[in-house]
Length: 150
Image 1: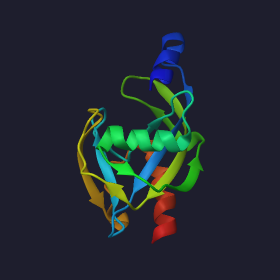
Image 2: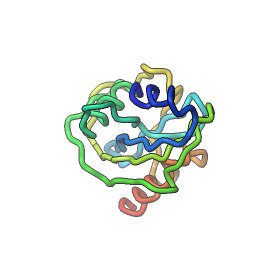
Image 3: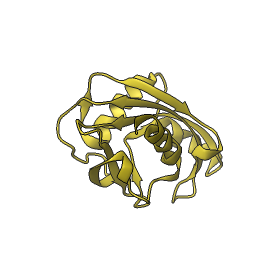
């Protein structure tokens, strides 16, 4: 988030448009990898902001590796999400309107390990039994995932 953090020096907590990538990791039983966020204790999925010059695919791979230690080969575009539903105010007070390019993968290599400190717990959930405390900008994405997978 070097790019976003750099902008914050000029605009403070004012809303920013933040473009990023998200990865929905489904295991062989079609369960979704979710992680508990360190900043607010809610559940989320791997993803984050693009850096200048990155492709959305590169962002997805980098964020998955940084947040989980997992690597992927194949990514399938799941959708592009934006609008009021993806607005978020971080616990720090910083505001963003997310534009999230979401990818789906069924094949990952490695074991989950928390490298960057953004998360402290993970679990694979059945799509019919997702946790209640889901980070707000992730909810519309998971709603569409459930609609297309059940």
